[in-house]
Length: 109
Image (cartoon, rainbow, N blue to C red; front, side, top):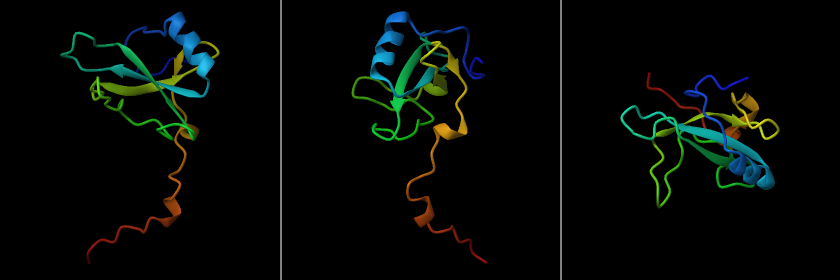
């Protein structure tokens, strides 16, 4: 099923999909949602997982030394078998590894 936050019918190009398939892992789709930008709708992809820079996908595409990522928001996960961008699942966002060690927030009386 198509990701619900995906604008238009954007798809992964065949060459990009083949490159991503060769690298394997979980890949997430980010789309430019800046209404004032001429590149609205463009897609970018980020690999996330235990052995990656990002253990889970951030809500916006991270900045790099050549690009600013705030325009690109997480819209779904790339299904490597079909090439479709589908909705993410709860299992795509593992619990923080130190979640059990974070003290609860105490509010004033």
